[in-house]
Length: 156
Image (cartoon, rainbow, N blue to C red; front, side, top):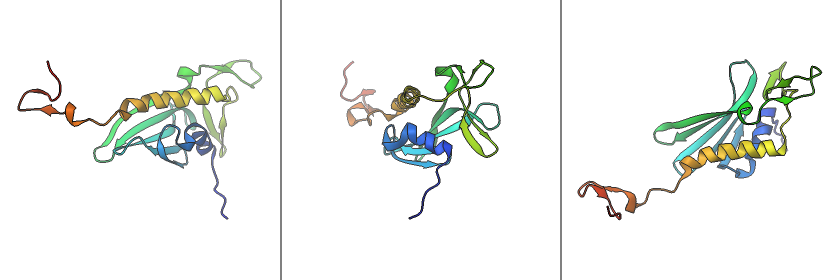
């Protein structure tokens, strides 16, 4: 049996979005998570830098319509909702939360190690963003009737 090698990014994405918690048919490849929002929209969630090479400070979510391409995207920076933390560095200074790749190894900054509550909050923020696009499919009652100039099934 072949053993899959999982990198730090993939391990962290699995903690956040594994078991189809936010998306369905979830796949993890490197620092990217793919999944289905609904029949027409897929999502790509990835760790991103914010100006510093190999310092991944947030998650970017991109929504992709199967026919029309990119619909919308949003980046959530960890510092915006987690805030600076005191870490294990000896200086006693606060640092921002990020994943850093150095010399081929990727790990959370010394100033921050995510808690279960942090994972829940990140998952919730991404889920809230996705929910804006997940909405119910448009029904025939809500379609515009051009011949009457108003929505069918509604009175004005």
